[in-house]
Image 1 (cartoon, rainbow, N blue to C red):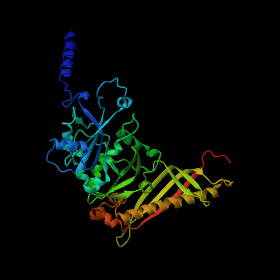
Image 2: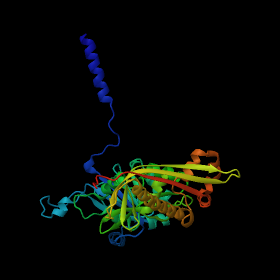
Image 3: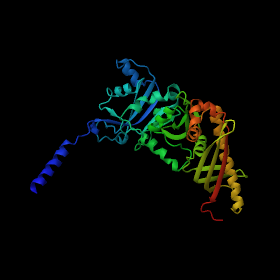
Image 4: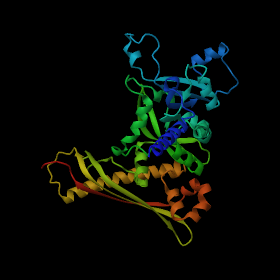
Length: 398
């Protein structure tokens, strides 16, 4: 009995000793963890120019400038410094210009005391100017190949300088984390599109179909998600913007509404607001006898009358609520028609899921048209059926 117990103990010890450690493990204190990346058109900073003038140069083209947000950053000097801003700074941004992301990242190794690592990269922000100049597949090639970077990393576009979206005036805030968390507010508003991570972006680019990315605008280190940028499937480049109302409309068409509102104006031109409780959408493919395609979109929603500025004393009976429903339906229909006009006429792209629906319902048909789908979509009729139902009007007491 004793020998059997001893044998088990020795076996357990042998297994424990043979367990391999992580082969690539390194002490976190010896690394620079970057959580945000911004990509802009190539424009060397004054520091880069001075370093190059003093011999810190190599063969390259100034195609893009990459800015990394590194956390945590060591505080230089005495930890008892009276400079509270220095004590509280939780990140450090560093930029380098070149024509190869990997080479740029390696350049950071001769400017920093610790090597950078991307295991915790949360967001990538690409400026519209760079996305219009370069192919997104080329810009993301290294990022998608690098095993250090997780496919859950979110990707955005910025209307202006992408590096500025990684700044803040709030000392306790890390901008890259802020951007990552803001996309979670879709349960509060329908002006945010579903986030696009690297895994989804890879699939979208591989399909060679047009798509949109959430757009960011910045002012005085404050940021806002505002509309979306269109990436043309054929070229992989940025071609134009959709505004917040367009993102709302696309969410309605695709059935991706989580919450939000519809604001309209009543017969007295006063504000009325509909709070969305539920929303569903169905895109149906139709094919005529002569092989002509068309789409029909059925949208249904229930919600509450949550705001009414008109103070006239009128009973909120069913007939009155029907009038409000009419205003909200008219407003939503106008928004959708406006967005459809932009997609079909201004940009000639499908970024609202019609092609995806066709590929599901008619895969053989889709194979024939997918290579020129954007151009074909601009000529296809699309009809809408909208039904909004007000189920209550909050805790209002008459």
